[in-house]
Image (tube, rainbow, N blue to C red; front, side, top):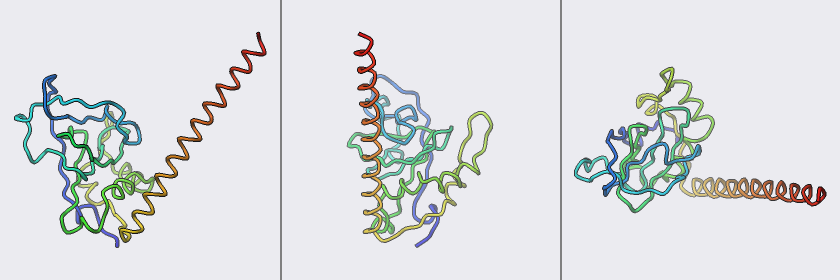
Length: 187
């Protein structure tokens, strides 16, 4: 099945807030993520819950999309701590009638594919800080295979990522071994 993002989800912007050391809600910002959308830092609550509307609290399974700057990625929020996304993100919540048709991780995977990124970045606006608009995001075409195929795609992707990490680790170990051999030869 092919459809657009606006037909299977609701999309809302993140919130603008000033972080506070004594908070009980995490304020997710682009700096918390790697280029590929992996959390790269420990999170600590830095917003007061009374300063945040309940409608902006992230739910497990929400897809957050970094729409500002050069590092555009989609990732799934699956943490057990209350959090809101900053204005750098759009929050994509799959509609109830599609929750049994599409896996959030599959949607994030689809959005991170080069063909999706090319479509989105081609329509980005701005000169110093480029931004992908909600209107553009809504028109992103999604191909939704049956759940079983989505699960297989996600398993293959996980294995590919593990392979890439192992290759990187192997290259690092080879480099360390070579450097050690050179040092031993000098001595």
